[in-house]
Image: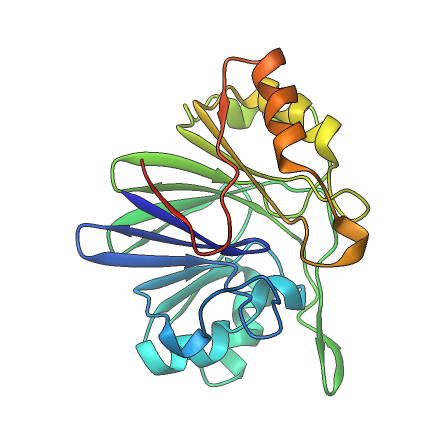
Amino acid sequence: MKLTYIGHSAFMLEADGKTVLVDPFVTGNGTATVSADDLTADAILLTHAHNDHVGDTIPIAKRTGAAVIGTFELATWIGSQGVENVLPGNHGGTIAFPGGTVKFVPAWHTSSYESENGVVAPGVPAGLVVRFGGKTIYFAGDTCLFLDMQLIAEEDLDVAVLPIGDRFTMGPKDAARAAGILRAGTVIPCHYNTFPPIQQDAGAFKELVEAETASRVLPLAPGESVEL
């Protein structure tokens, strides 16, 4: 299974001829090395409604026919924008998509989309436990540290994708504590260095996690891929 970091919190997963996008914020993402028009997908998975996560979901889904999976209010709103293949869910639920499944788990954050008509798609954020290409990957989304990550660890995670930017999410110290709770073999940091308020040193985060846990950390540059 190939995982590519698009930048910010956007990722692409590829396995067995299927492609999955997670939080595809590309247009307006100064760290991205690709155009939204270059991306294809069989499924698009969303953690929450903030613009820097929904990103280019609607045009990509309209162009490719990808299934868009998100919490109920967000998926319903995306369907109202002309996207035909939407699959709403909520915490604790699991939804199948071409090549895999995604389970919604809690995240502590807020969730709304800023449109030209004001704030729409209110609802709740989620983390995603994705089973795809023979791997189990936890996308924490935007969240603070919370003790119920102990339950998420019981999903037997291969990879944990954790925000480290601070201010709007966990910072490096709390994300390192999360890594210790989650016990994933590999930790990938995200949601940092996109904007000045979330500048962080991923190398220092790697040293902290690897000194205190059994996980390895893979800081990926935007556009960089890893085979899992």
